[in-house]
Picture 1 (cartoon, rainbow, N blue to C red):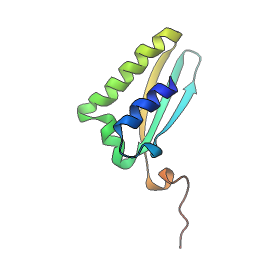
Picture 2: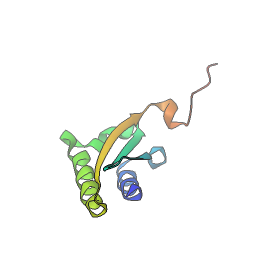
Picture 3: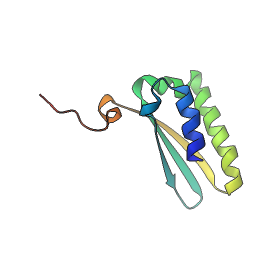
Length: 90
């Protein structure tokens, strides 16, 4: 399922190398946390949230087979997080 989310999101963004998908398992729920670069956040959310809603619908439908419900959270990373850590001050 994580691979499905990753494939969909990476196809939407300009910087696929900045996409990070975290899978959080609960007893009855799987949560997929999507982090993308600040410039790509709007592309993943879409106009009036339609793209985000479509991603959530696909993930929910695919997760029905496993018997768990699934949720999707979308966050943006700042420039420091996208580069993999804190920038050194000079």
